[in-house]
Every structure is written in structure tokens, then in C-alpha cells.
Picture (cartoon, one colour):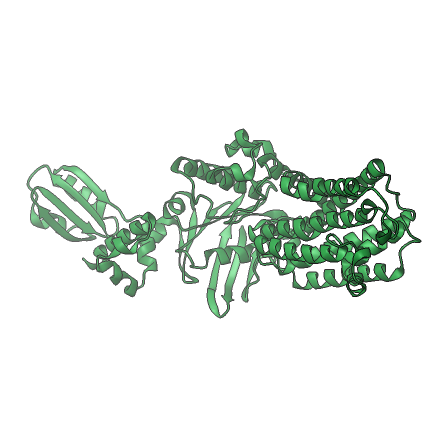
Length: 335
Length: 248
């Protein structure tokens, strides 16, 4: 069953196109990711679906409701989480939960929700005194307190430590397993890859790709590298003839194979047939992040990575790692 | 509908609790006005001819009441609501069936209630400590109090509507506070103002409010003019505020 239908959504801010003819749908009970770089229009799409922004063109249906015309009904079935902090400083966790419970006719069990999110111990703590992760988890709790049929979560693990992030993912899966459809806005690729059933990659307000994480990785056509030390003599032509292989290189005792598709499986099969064991095997698969970079970077922006100046350009650690991934994708594409 | 009605009650209780957690607001909105009244009562206990035969504390009682109303509606409420808007509290509420309008209603209700309660406190303190007369025309006094509070809350909403941030709301509120309280007679009681200054004061919300309150406590009841003026301030400010209010 289709829960969200977006057809040719278009939104401009002061003549700057934020969202350009975006069309997609979300099915009942899936975790659907809206991914893309900062400023790509992800949040605008989510806020049009939530009814917080009015589209310039295009139609949106959420459980058959028009987010503008049927705003009242929509608010009963859709739970939202916004990016910024949205509670008064001196409100306690328990007070926030009981306040938001009073907005809905059939609210969820607030105490159980706080338990599940690891917030029970801080239930009497004021919002201002919460850590970043606790604030995020409280905002997730408030998005779910009305027992929504669809939850829109915007950058929900930003600022969380790795353990808290994994706990939150587990919680989101648990909610999905109860039948809630989840729309997840994120620029964090590992999160999208681990959590989403399907996703839409948005760049500069347009849809670059839609599909499962595996679909997106495959559609980027990225190459994979296999490195190993053969257990016995390896004929030069053996691996070059394997389907998908584009290059074979030797350096000392180590062989490097680069190719596309299921090149790893094909190489393993060829070696097995020749009776050779691949020792110290190392496989570098394209990740969703590699696919993301390949699918979003225009030829112009790729050459920037070529200049090798990415270390200086990245202002923080995250950007730096993006730039490195980018240069790897470029290397792969060039060979 | 029942869920939404209880939502408004919950919001009002929550806003009241939050107000009680603001020591600065409590000091200016409750403790300071009572202290001011006591200082006026102790400093000049005799009736003064230039005050129309009243004591300083008699003259200051209505001024202290306007002080309370002004602190709550021009300083407290706009700063709170503008910071809610700035921090996304109103946007977040727009995602719930309660909607952001109810938090405005809750703020108005809480500030109105606190203004009434503090006014009662000021009247009782004045009566018990210094024997200040209770309003001779009680119903008229209540009417003045409500119209005045309504007008000031409407002006407060207007400040909220035009201020882009909580900080600017505080600055606008502070400036308005000094101007309005000057005309209320906080520094120079109306009886001691020059004739032209008193005439100007008659046309400001607090000047009209003090005049009407004084007439209903000690005089022959309020004139219609100040009541009508306060009603006009309330309606016009509220109408403009509704038109220009930004939710985000």
C-alpha cells in the first residue's frame, strides 16, 4: 500500500529552486530515506510532506490526505521530528511527554517510550540540562507519542555517539516492525545504508536515484578491488579473462584485481578452479558513500578532488573524509 | 474535541509552571511591586495637599498595579513567545493536533490570571499594611482592570508579532516599559505632572488606566473616555498583531 505519494513537487525560495519536479512514493511499513548533501532540498521535501511548507507546484498525498487542505487530519496520523531544539529550556522530560500526550486522542504509553529510548533515568531533568543525544531521543519520543502511522525523522542521529546512534537505529527498526512507515532524512550514508529499505538520492533539488542501498551502489557502476597473495604460481592470463575484470596488477607477491559487478565472486571461483588459495585476502567494495559521491558529483566537482587539495579544503573531519572518498571514486572511474 | 480542550489546559498548566521557574520574572512581576508599595507607604505616611489630600501610597497603588500588568504583558510574554518562535517551539507545535495558536492562548490566560492574582495581592497588602481604601466602585474597578490588562496583552502580542527574536522582543519591551510607565506616573505621579503632560498621559494606555483605576478606588467611578480608549488600544493592537504575526 502506498502511504506517501509525491508527484512533480516543485518549491522555490526567492527565485532559487529548492526542489525541482521530485516524484516518488513510500510504501506501508518501509523505512524510506531521503539522502543527499546539505542544501540539496531534503528538508524542504520533508516539510512539504508534513504540511509545514506550501509547494509551488505538484501534488502530495499522505495516506490519501492533502497536507495543506487536510492539515487537521494529517496531524493526527503523522509524527514529525524537526532538526532544531524545539522545547522550552526549563521543561522536564516527563512534562514534555505528558504535554504532548494531551494533544492526541490515543497517545502511546509515555513511560514505556522513555524506557525504550533510555530516557527513564532523566525523566525529571530539564531540557536544557540534557545531553545532545538525550535531546535527540526526546524529540524522537515526541514524534512517536501520538502513535502515528507515519513518522518523519530529520537528521535524527546528528550529534549522537556511535553507541547511541546504534541504539536509535534499533529503536527505529522496532517502530517500523510495529507497522509505522518511516521517512528518514539524512546526509549520513552509513545510517541510510544500514537502516533504509529504499532511498531517494537528492542533489540540487532533483532526484538522482531511487532504490534499495544495493540498487544505488550497483547503479553507480563503481569498481571493486581485490588484493591477495596467491598460494601458488598464477598464470598472467587467468584472471584477466574473468568476466568483469578490467585490470590485474602485480607488486611483489601481491596481486591486485580491479573490476565491476560481482568481480569478487568471479575471481574467487576462477582461483578455486585453478586450485589456488587467495591468502591475506583484502576486498574493497564500493560503499553507499562511494555510490553517493559518484552519483552526485558532476564532472567539474570531480576534478577538484584530482588536484589533491582536499585535505586543505575540508574544514572539518567529515568533509575531509568526504573528499578522500571522492578522490577514491575518481581513481576508480579513471582506471 | 475533548483531547484538544485538555490540550489547552495542559498547555496553560505547563506555561504557569515555566513562569514559576523564572526567578527574574517573579521578582519584577510579583515581589518588586509589593516592595515598592511598602516603600511608598513607609516613606511619606501623611496625606499631601499636592496629591489631592491623598497619601503617597494611595496614589501609588494603581501605579503599582499597572507596573505588574506591564511587566507581565510587555516584557514577560513577548520575550517568551518570541523565543519559542526563534527556537522552533511553535513550528514543532504546528506538527501536532494542538497547533501553535493554543500556546498563545495559554500564555494569554496565564499572564491574565497572574495579573489578576497579583492585583488582588497589592490591594490586600495596601489595605492591611497602610489602610488604603478598597475600590469604592468594585465592579467598575474590575471592568477597568480587565480592559487595561486586555489592552496591554494585545500590545504585548503586537511586540511579539514584530520582534524577530526573543532578544529584540526584550529590548522593544524594555523601551516601551519605560515610556508607558513614565506616563503612568511611576517617576512623577499624574497629580504632580504639568497640565500638558497630564493631558498627554490621558491618551496613553497606562495613563488612562491609572486615571480610571484611581477614579474607581477613591472617586466617583471611572469616566467613559479612558475605558473607551483602552478598548480601542486592545482591539487595534490585537487586529494588527493577528495580521502581521509570523509563526516562524
